[in-house]
Image 1 (cartoon, rainbow, N blue to C red):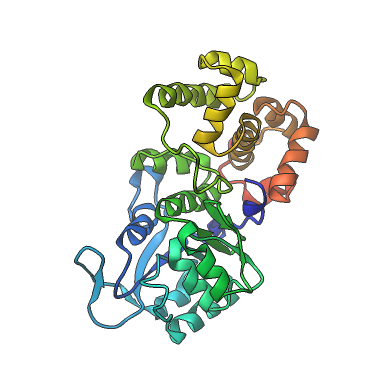
Image 2 (image 1 turned 60 degrees about the vertical axis):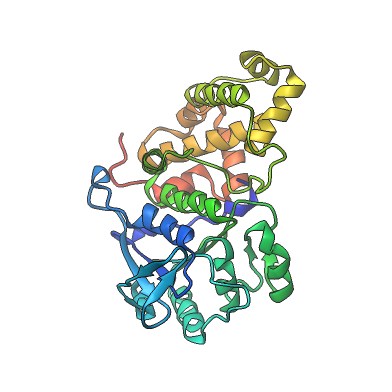
Length: 335
């Protein structure tokens, strides 16, 4: 999670933040469904502080979605005026112009501090509004060249799952939109809540945004997948312990060379980088939800020394652990 998620913002500064997802004629059903599933479903198990949700129609009249679905919206783009987060699903076509009124509404929303999130080709809507000029953004690997050609002022980041620029977030292909939306939930409500949402979706709780879109072996053989899955479970419950490649390889019954190759094929990164990312996520959770000292958090997350935790935390998030706690700790943090 290096450069693509350093600038951290949090919607929880607003009680029950309002998420507005765009709908339009020719709507991409999957991406729209991702936003509804993660932000729009009520979650009574999480209390009464969950997001408010609305659907804003870009076009007037009946809206048709892929698969013969008809959409009834909650209102027009005037709903964007009260949004804390606007979600742009995949756009209806690269050659389909983005309405000037929508571009203007997005610029106004951004100017007042609203966050904007695009899934897949929805990035072309944000690019058309000019909000991505001089900023980093990503999209599905199929659209990277088109995005570069049409919007040369956008700093296109290739082959990542999502890009977090603070108030503007962009994701790659459709499923990467799930990862990005969970990233927002994790940022707003903490790791425990994001994991709860992921369990309900029956998906892995976290894929790092810098993970490659295209892996050389995206589907592991069944036996290998089971062994690595058991290893991930083990590591999550033993993050505080030191781990070496040779001992991890022995645990899954592989040679070191085979283990490193299979691990990278499954995760897009190395065991050392994966461990640092997971330890940082656990440290963030402690900083948000507890009053443990920095020394104690460093020990319990496997960094050992507070200085090591501070180094990696600042390198990844451009914040010290103390600064992060000050900005994002929950009022009910346990002592």
